[in-house]
Length: 591
View 1 (cartoon, rainbow, N blue to C red):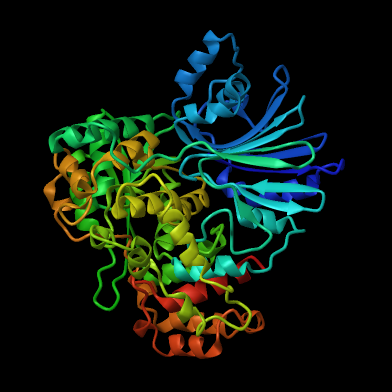
View 2: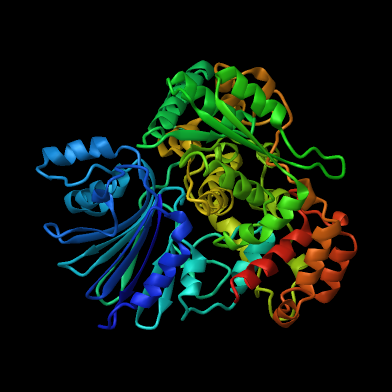
């Protein structure tokens, strides 16, 4: 797990060492253990390393293989690297290191762009071919590892975070009105390739891009699983689906145990993280460290779920760490949380993950986390109403969108509204494309492949890596997701959602954590904005920078500030926090 960056010149010039150095410095928290920069010809590569596999200097990056004529920077982990290494050795390749980085180099040489289909893991990498001058970059199937891009005069820059690119300068930092529309429609999700800034884009997940020496490039999506039933699936019993799912979960968790350092678990006490703990214990992991976080209550809403995480920790004998965050510390942590965001993200979970990661990183470098289960196994409330939908685009939008296009007319400032309902068009494009059997399948595919990437997945990456902590997400094992996509929707929607996952969990964990109201990282102080939090947002939204930007109509902002609790989105988010967070993020990036 690391941070990568670089600059490629297509005009015959030399990359800016100063720009690469600046980007690498911004990425330092992602890789506090080592750093490296190389500049050769028209390309410069930068890297910050977090040592997880092959702790020696042999796996330092940027990695260069002069015999093959390849240079590489890589962020992530290839869980099946040892099997691939053995296969490559049989082909005659010789290795000088013991980690997964060199396996990517050899795999690229042996199999070309097809190598990504062989990788089990999370990754973003950039490879330079010395002899052809080509640049190849790829991102894992779910975009667990980020890769941001910006065209600069005569070339291209890339980095693991958007702030790193902005800090290096020379980038258009004006607001993208279509991305703003997405932000306000999808509770801050801006699907790729856009970001909220016009000058910065992101490589889509499951995509490999190859640049020629002149800057021309082509993209290829290498993974797009069907959300449909195969021949014979209709004859598979519920019990057989459960058996297949349990085996796939066991394999997914076991794959993510690979490391040359200890692996812990972020334990919320919900069914997803509890199941991971149970499967790790079943696989024989001992001295497992688990971590939970809680906050002060507000408006009578409890701010922790310690009773459930304690139950799981006791059942499986973990070395458990309970972290309680007082309100005063929450306020102090907000600037750091916002600065850690590659893009503005409104979920209250952000500060929870940020503070949890800070404490976890004092004990351990790698954790498994339960993100993705709701999107993969149908855990959200908007799926059941789609069962009999005759208009999936409209019905999904009614349940999921924060506000309609016509509402934005009354909320966005002059000149900031897109000419058309670009967010509605995006839903139509993704929901109605071929490859999904039912409206529920269409929604699960959209959420798993688009909304998940730029909300919980990005949140976990940004907040853990702010403290040099690697988070692995077994529910996003691609073979597990391929299996889940075939399971009939009714098996997922049973039992209040995630029915078949709960069936499997009952074989592993206590029923008390399964048969309870669905929970999240509760941070009620940010849901019910009052006191110092309200004062903070009033100051931000009345600042000179906010007034000059004019993203929101003054009448709308005044209404939110007057009664924050009266303006809650359909998914129970604060409209005031949504607009205030965007302005705070823009000011933190100094754009």
